[in-house]
Length: 455
Image 1: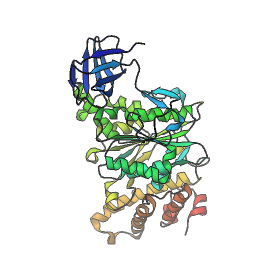
Image 2: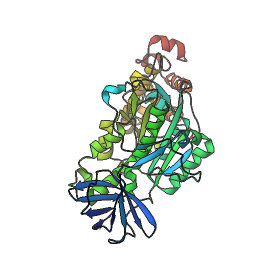
Image 3: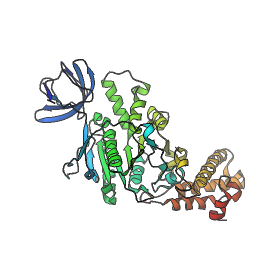
């Protein structure tokens, strides 16, 4: 098909250029804009009779109205793929930036993949070990699940995301890879990510996509889709199990809001476009397993809640689409607890079907349930102690307070480079539960108390 080329543009509006009197232009078509021997890439985001609106990924700075050559390439935005993408670092549009040369492509794929057909989905059941006790023991990640991390500004979500990416593994010897997409990260945070992956050697089995805060805002719209396309290739073409970490989805949503504003769309809640829910769903629902396919795509989106507001549109809508959430606590962070995971508002909806007999240790469901119940009681007692004083509490309540402190300091708290096996996590949990009288363990079967309870 012959390329359609035009000289000059009708209007420039922020990161958008408007072309009038164009013919046979298609929605989502890739556009090449050339001026003074410099090329920029864009895509058609709106077509109306003879008018096309083009989103320019590198921004429109330096473009003049009459000078640019605009070529419509007749295809959607694609990424070159091959098994050699493992161990490589790319920019937010999937172009190599690690000085190791171009990817010799065996396949090109449209980044605008679709959500997995519910009828073709296989129900997730297999456990992924992250090495983080609070997650493995109480908020278990299941293969094919989408489990976001809800954080706040200044909390160590970048550190936790890197730790999970380095440590995650399957109990079996199946192929496991990680795709890490940095969306709008500051340069020092991005350097921290890449440096940790390189020093640990984990990068050899990873694909990293970096969209920095200094990069054009509209490039962020493509980055999660580029990352997921690479993950789907590794999972469903090469048969690997892939963990995708998208950090930070709030930056993606703010880029979407900015683009929506330039397009003149009617804003919804807090200025975000009314289609934010369906747009996020088009990303999150690309996680899962497909019947008859060996691989899987598991997602951990990371998002920062403005003003720690969990009712903000981004975490609110994310919570409706995903299967739980891991919530980071500012209070635990002040206590120097790392990772500061607040287990009580956190949840893994698929955990119940992926732990216990045949999946993890038999006592795992009972231990997790008892930890939730006991720590919940600790929070109630702390509220009471704030009113009447700890000295006037009954002895059993004082035991619970000691349990609560030990739970935070020994179970939730662990070093950044410490990877605990599930057996280690559950053994720590039993030591903590043994601080309480046996009669308080109402969520645990007697057979497990006889096996693991230390009087």
